[in-house]
Image 1 (tube, rainbow, N blue to C red):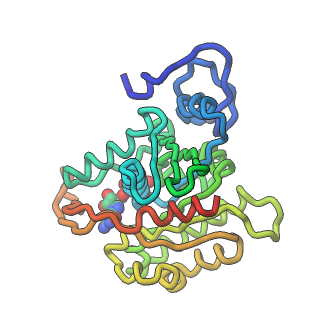
Image 2: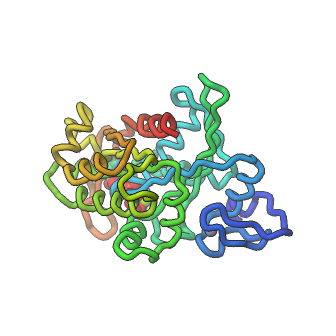
Length: 296
Ligand SMILES: Nc1nc2c(ncn2[C@@H]2O[C@H](COP(=O)(O)OP(=O)(O)OP(=O)(O)O)[C@@H](O)[C@H]2O)c(=O)[nH]1
Ligand SMILES: [Mg+2]
Ligand SMILES: [Zn+2]
């Protein structure tokens, strides 16, 4: 029995899904259309407040799972001024998986492309300096391949569109190691994603979009100059992305992050050379999140 099965399941009236609005039978465990956990919808109803959805997007292998798992773990360990309470045991699965792998000095496996395999986290975040501020945050960990497929051919993964339409903020991860090494792939992928986001969120053509977007330059341990001035790094190495943000988004900011302090290399079961995290030293994980909260 999974953690999700153990959450209270009240049979009865049909429930509309929070993400895609499909009506689901009262006893459903996941939404029949988009696979969002129905426990999340019941939690949201119990809170009697609309949750803020923050969506983490980015290419495959950019570091979304590692970043999100580390962020949730830091929040639940009372980082900075925040107290974070997971709503439902299913919310802890992502951070549990990521931290367990890192403790074994391995990176977690890539996220399955099937939406019913994604981890969802629903956290209630309290600001200890201002107790009137409570945020109900919903963050799914999506697969980069699914995001790429949806951007290339909209409606391949309708859940991604529904999620972004309902998002109060987005965290876009971009591989700083690749960008710093001169590859144009991260810049082009991010440009496509931002242009897709622009299309999904746009109301009036010439108005800048109010949704805050934090651009997280991941794996910055490979490209340490990124920490000194993330904005300047983006202007130089991710100029196409920088321009679309400047033209279309009212609130955007760049942040450098890394989760590991030292890497070792070894081979996996197929004899591919893979990196192993020898030392976990999170840097810049909370800043993008705090910035998003400040803009909500
Ligand atoms: N050097 C370094 N490498 C990292 C860091 N975070 C992630 N990586 C590397 O990036 C790989 C991919 O990380 P994931 O978090 O699985 O990437 P993802 O974006 O979830 O990928 P998909 O699930 O395919 O969408 C890891 O296996 C590591 O090799 C980091 O902070 N520093
Ligand atoms: Mg992943
Ligand atoms: Zn749904």
